[in-house]
Amino acid sequence: MKIAAACDDDLNISRYFEQAPYYAVVIVEDGMVVGRETRDKMRASTSNSDEKHRHNGLEPILDCQVLLAGDIEREAYEMIKRYDIEPIVTDVGNIYEAVLLYMKGKLSNLKEA
Image 1 (cartoon, rainbow, N blue to C red):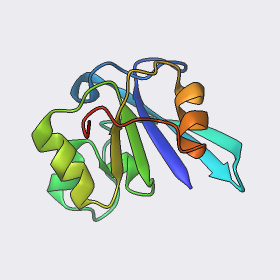
Image 2: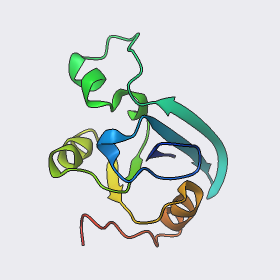
Image 3: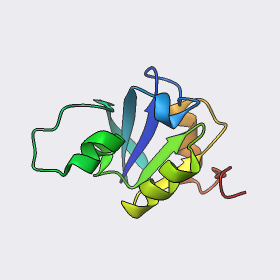
Image 4: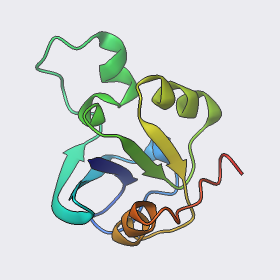
């Protein structure tokens, strides 16, 4: 499983999904974190992905199952769901803390509350 977090740095979830320049992608296997990558949110596409993916900033995380952010505008939230990525709005700031809570089933989605 891959869990992406919209971020401004290597440690903290960005307060606003739309303004975050990067994604931290945490790789989880058998309930344990086994890897991590930082991906540029607006990287140039070298694939045949359609124009929509490149411009909405989702192309770098299309292989992820979950996206964490401090806030996501409603339109973006619904778009993320259409790509079979579970968007979670959280007030947990630390990426690893949020991932661990998610893996335990204890991370609340503030957008759904």
